[in-house]
Image (tube, rainbow, N blue to C red; front, side, top):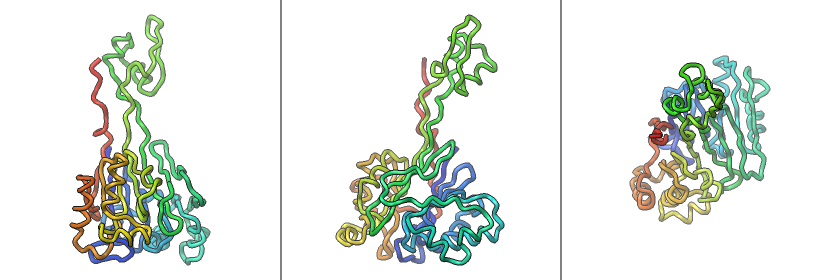
Length: 317
C-alpha cells in the first residue's frame, strides 16, 4: 500500500508556463490531503487525475496569495458538486476571516461542514490532524510573518506474525493466531500464556513526508524534516542570491540540501522556484553538492512511497 506525493504547483510567487502556484497533494488509499492551495489548484487536481471530492483535508502554510488564493474557488466548486462529506481546513491566523469575507467560501453558507482549525500564534508544535493510521503535525517556519510547515507521518504498524514461533510455543493454528495478530494474548493447552510480542517481529514503521516551504533554514523546518522519507523544501534561489533569500524569508537550493542532509531525510524535492530559473540546472547542481539525491520537484509526477521498503528483514528465529 503506497502513498503518492504529487506536486501540483512548484513556482514561487510568479507562475510560469511550466510551473504553477504552490500546492502539493498526498494520495493514500484513494483519499487526498492537500498542502497549500494556490490559484488554479483545482485545475491541477484535474490534471493529476485526482478527484476533488476525495479531498479530506487542506493545510495552508500562510496567507500569501500564491499559497491560498485557490482555496475559495475550490470550496465553491465543492459546493456546486453538492458535496456532503465534511472538509478539514488547517489555517494560519486570519484564515477564517479571509474565507468569511469572500462570497461563495464563507463557511456558514456552504452545504457541507468545514472543520476549521485555525492555528494560534506563537506556534511551537501541534498535531493538527489525526486518524487511526496517520497524523499531521505543524511547526513554525521563518518567513515574513506567520508561516508553518507540515509533516505527514503514518503510525507504526504491529510487527509481522511469525507462525513458526507460535507453533514452537504451543499455539494451535486457527483463531488463536488471529487473536495474537490483533494484539490479544492467548492461553495454550498446557495453560501457558503467550503474549503477542513473543510471536511478532519488531514494529513496522510507516512513511513520513515533510512540506517545508516559504522559509529560511530554521529549527522548525529541520524538525519536520528529521528522518523523513521525502522532504519538499523551499529552494527559491541559487547561491548568488543568498542575501535576497534571507531578506525575503526563503532558502537557496544549497540551504535546502543542507537541511535535508543534516536532518537525515531520505529524499529531497526542490520546490517554490523563482521564475528567473527557466532552467533549474544551477539549483540542482548546487543542491547535489550537499545532497546527491536532490531533484527539482516535477509537477504532476507521482512520487510513490511504500512502507514495506522500510520493513526489517524477517526474523530467523
